[in-house]
Image (cartoon, rainbow, N blue to C red; front, top):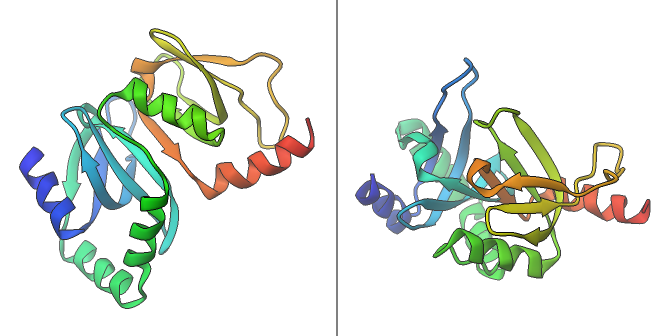
Length: 185
């Protein structure tokens, strides 16, 4: 898979990255352009209906397949003709993240003081959390989660790093909610 991902990065291919479906019949995938990889992680943008939807870090062990079919090639042609690919690459260059070590990446995210989206899909409890990461411990992070009403939980939520399936950075969804959640503190 490493060589195929390297080729997608080199060619700036638009791909669909499918996650392993272990427990239910819902299929999760992320659509976008892969920017970089390590032995354990990939970093790609997330696209929804031709719009940038943040940068997504995915563990390689959670990937079941990366598709680059005629459908994705056609989508990429549209992205290029609309100059969206270049805008995404320019946007990505503004966000400094390093995938070399997951904990280092989390430290960089804390330093930005920006909210993230964390999804845990394979732990005992399927979780979707939004908010800023406040602390990194040896095996855990703490996140100051807020709900869809912009209300913060009374306590920070502890999440095992090994349970994080998807980490989304610079998501318009999280950024806008965070802006107004801050006003309601």
